Length: 398
Image (cartoon, rainbow, N blue to C red; front, side, top):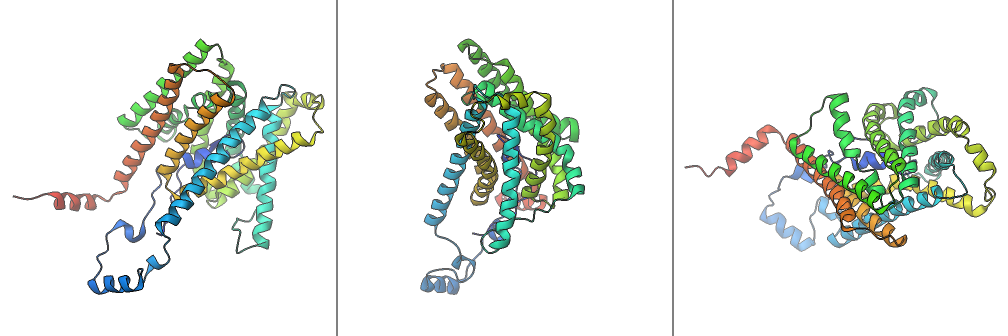
């Protein structure tokens, strides 16, 4: 089955330099995927059915279509790859940021941005050497483009910095709840900035998310593991994710609609902007006194974190390509649930029933919001005349 192009509507988001692109696809439930023949049933003549039976396949596009089993295997592999990269990246970032001997979260984030810029250049070179195997847009630096992307880059570095700080202070187990208000801020900023209203059903879903968030904060406090600093960073990260989505829509035409060009300029600008911040917050001193500064294992883990940050953008695009935007969001929600369970098991934590309820409320509210917005966009994209014809066909008459 051939799939058409999807219209990009949102931006991306947060864990590491490429998280900002995770939340770009995670908010793309408003995309429309067009199936072959525009979803219309094609009536086949008996002669053509006979030819298909004798030839074993349709003489047209179906000859090129894959078997159901092969498509199912590909989808399973892509979804598994997305889960592996995303979950590993969160645990890896938590390992780097939770280092008791190194208190330099800005430097860690800066280095991951630097790795992403280097990988973009590497992919550009490989696409020239292997044009038939690797497709990657050209990465030529343009001062004008960099300047126009700069306002978005300010939001971008705020987003990835607050994301990493939230992860540093709340840990992996509470990370899903701590950063759960992105959807709520998306609704709020859409109304304040672009005057876009939200349906009552979608607002109810946001209410469920808010309820889960506050219940989670309460239960972390009861357990004695609540970090208000981490909660504040989580709220700020959620707000920046939503702002990043809005500003990305404005900037995408500047980079010819290429998410990889946007990633390149965002991370390049971020590298420059992080340097004075690292100096101002005194992380140079922390780095100079770090005993493992010249340890190959430390730099290997730092580089691996940057590679996974770059890879998450690629596997996110693959998952949407082989499934759909709605399925991608459902997969992301299920992944967050699995990530929380793994974190509790890995760190041997004991959580109350209400703590688990808070996580379920956040995940269910997010899934319901995705489903509601998907149905609303489907109704908007169906032409009125088509709806009229459908009603006429369903009317049994007198």
